[in-house]
Amino acid sequence: SKRHADIIIPEGVENHVGVDILRTKVHALVSSMARSARPVGLSTTAG
Image (tube, rainbow, N blue to C red; front, side, top):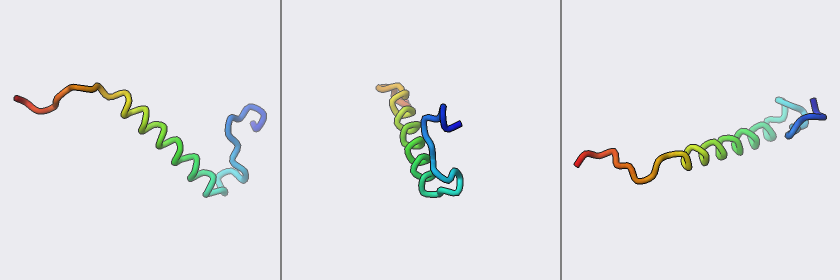
């Protein structure tokens, strides 16, 4: 419900611009988290 929502997109799924902005932001956050979770300094090449 709106009372407990962190984010409200007016017009719901019909608001394509609002949904796209939210999707883009979530994708960027997930990508950033994935990059920071990768181990650093490990080589994948032999030798």
